[in-house]
Structure formats: C-alpha cells, structure tokens
Length: 80
Image (tube, rainbow, N blue to C red; front, top):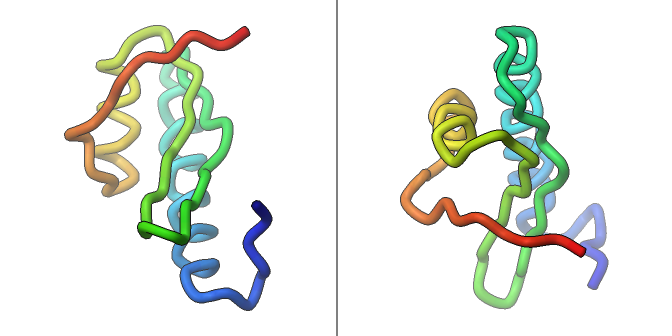
C-alpha cells in the first residue's frame, strides 16, 4: 500500500524517517556499521517500522535513542 502524501500521519512518518536516517549517518561517521533503510507505516493500526542494516542490535538501539524512537521492540530479521 502507498501512503498518499496528504494522508494523516504522512508528515509524522517523513519526520521519523529523517530522524532515523540522521542517527544512522551519525553512527556511520563514528565508524559503526549502521544504515537506515526505510520507514514503513501501517495506517490501519498506526504502526511505523524502521528498517536498519546494522552490525548489532545494540547499534540499532543507539540509533533509535539518538532519533528519539522507542527501542522496546528491536528484533533481527533475515532477508533473502
């Protein structure tokens, strides 16, 4: 599903994505392997997922902290 740019929540998602991206870039500049990939918003339940590529969950937790994102549900994923 594509979120229309004028849909409720779009501004919040773009702001969240920008903060997450900046945090990843800061950590990369410090030599840590963290890259923000994308934010995925699920409007039906208001969930927003941030996808990172990182060397560890601790690196993602630090990115979330710097971006002022909740870090209570950080999980690893396997991508094909």
